[in-house]
Length: 357
Image 1 (tube, rainbow, N blue to C red):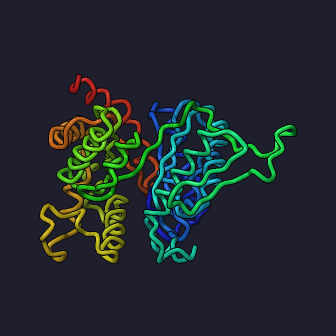
Image 2 (cartoon, helix red, strand yellow; image 1 turned 120 degrees about the vertical axis):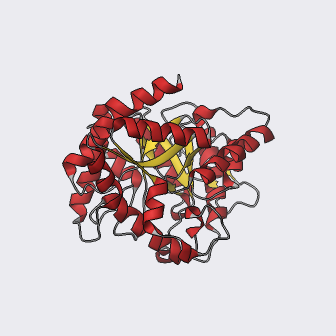
């Protein structure tokens, strides 16, 4: 989800994000992932499923993913039902991205700031899968799980009362989770449950690489060989025919949306004590970091051939993966933003795939 300036009107940023998805569909991008936050004025999509539902009739082939649904924020019966409906409305173009919900301010306004949101998440997804696996009447009572789901007293199947809807895709839509920390243990659990990882675009390549090893471990724990096609990796990328313009808009210009994004993210991570994602050495002091260094390490930019080379160098460092996700940023210059997406689809990715094959 792009980070927008706080002063940009909400209706403007929402429509801008919608237009980015519509353009991605026209250009043949495979999927899109939309995040959600309740209390963030810059990352301001409050419900990813509502947002995605607004795009179903305006897109034709792109898969629509929650990136992610915050499972600690809502009862799993509601999430399961809404996700199943979105899957039917899109006729199977839905991808179910899930997470506990990372923004502490969201947790505070919901009254769960002192709760173990990771545990709520784990219990919620187990119940969602049980709902989709079973038929009414329901009596879901999993051990050590706070969410009890019963319709034993009120089910009236003769008139259709008591059903919880199942997804369009059988048996399930693809389930993915974002990975935002080096050596994340959550990726092991993803492998065990056959959920697919998305490595965040703000991680250094050396930390992205750790995700695959942990995913393989999870797969091995259940006797399955991991497939690199399951692994998505996100990057912040800007492409332009003019190499100098690309590097200015992508990094150095004070009005660069990429610079704005990483400055904004830096301040958030600094407050939460999570600047380690930007460090080559975890023992390094925070004051050794600077924004220019972060941009040089994390933004891929240049003319098409330069971007191809940088992507291939990145892949050489982290290893093979199934899909490269193009990270969204604010459209400071709409024409440049759209042209970058076009060049990525038409010039860069065909050459990357040719080189890999």
